[in-house]
Image 1 (tube, rainbow, N blue to C red):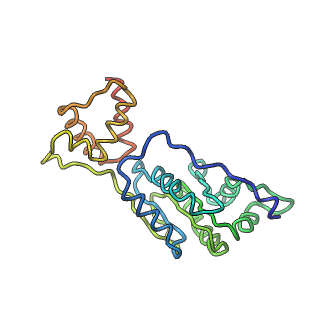
Image 2: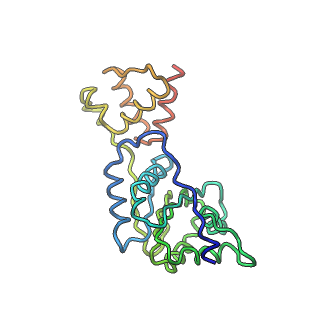
Image 3: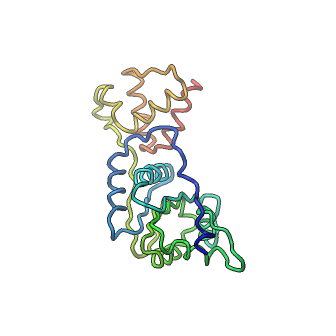
Length: 233
């Protein structure tokens, strides 16, 4: 059975742009997952705050820590909790064998694996949280990182709230050179230059960008969408 299930799963999705302003969070989550007693970390936060991107960056940094690999499992396409375990199995490349369904094959596969699962968008299948507890109980070297808008409320869970990007204080705006070092402003500038390669930052537009970022609460997705509109102006 082990030979049949020894199938390589896809690598983590490649990120096309550098991650801005998350150095502290990356170190903190990596440190959590490297602690032997930590088996499950849930990255929580509102939609668009950057949970998925942070999780992928953390996973990339931990590739050498998991001898059997790291598997990214996108759960956005499903909303039935009963499909979570089969979806994980499929992401790992496990195929049904005879009369044994995937829900039975997955625990067997994971039993002796030093593996990290990155389960993305878990909030819509939250009722499947207890299945994660079962997998962790039966697989002593397995670790799981989850992105979710809400905590899972299961034993062994360590919540890591993902904050918005750092923002300046509009009542005491510093010079434009300092403003551009705030993560939210830096992200806007990066995306604006991608959308319009000849875009140039000036003291005037950098202050306007800072105001936009504050209005958008420092949410990376909202900032990226706003910056993309630069090419329409």
